[in-house]
Length: 195
Ligand SMILES: [Cu+2]
Image 1 (cartoon, protein in one colour):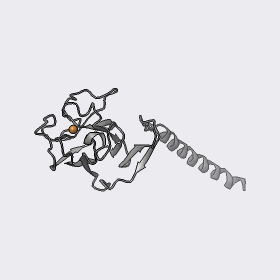
Image 2 (image 1 turned 60 degrees about the horizontal axis):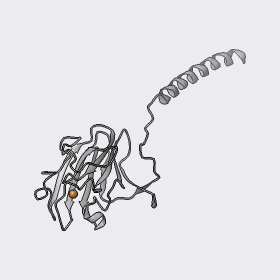
Image 3 (image 1 turned 30 degrees about the horizontal axis):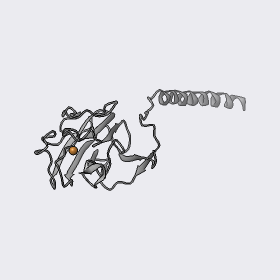
Image 4 (image 1 turned 30 degrees about the vertical axis):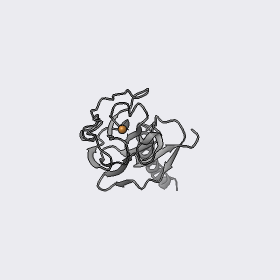
């Protein structure tokens, strides 16, 4: 019994040693931390469609979806009260419709400032292709009733914003959060009511 137990014990030791090594490797993986600390609610959004096989995300985003924030909103959200998350490396297509009866709007992925947006955010997209045409032009940006489609690759993880680049719009709240996550799922979150 002891002779058979001995080799069995050695084998067990080898296996547990290997398992321990794997555990250490897992522990060394960087933790993915969120910079959004407010309680968030995951929304069911039929305007986001993800294809994990093709690594694509399609977003239907409407400026002036409703009258909130003087129509200066994306799908009814403004002032960072929505966070769209896509996985790093995915190709993102935005079908951008302007439903605001009063004015043109634009959309683009930009760095999220630590404070409020300036009156004129720099109209250079974080990711090539990630901005609608004539983004700062009050008359020639995406006009009422027009849909413009943009496509870009969310190449680098980080916390960004989607904003309108017409003078005064982003600083008046026409922006939402856009997160590119490492290995994260696609989704939409909003702060819990009352926060
Ligand atoms: Cu706008």
